[in-house]
Length: 154
Image (tube, helix red, strand yellow):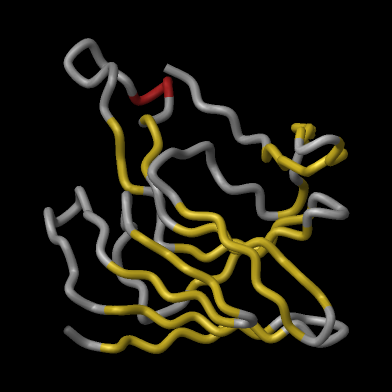
């Protein structure tokens, strides 16, 4: 039970005669490489003429050196970090936001310009399904990005 920690970028190669051809590019990430996961979200935000991917949540299998016969296929929530991913250079940066206390899997997210909204999901750690709506704003000036989160309760 292994998951890939690579990122896969799908792009449109050409559109001819109503036929669309896609290309899948596999990229290795550098920097704060997120652990392999499933049940996560990956959205693209746009700010100041730049774009970045924003990865959040998900679950991952426990590391193979911690597996026992009883827990061979066990999974854990990924840490509640937000990762900014530069698709051009394959560089990832992790952000810890105090408003995000639990890793959430199978949530819904939507991006609009420089903002991502996250709703729902499930946390294995405490078996909750939060009723909060999280608003994450990403500012992409030249230099270091700014990542802020606001909790919009219930």
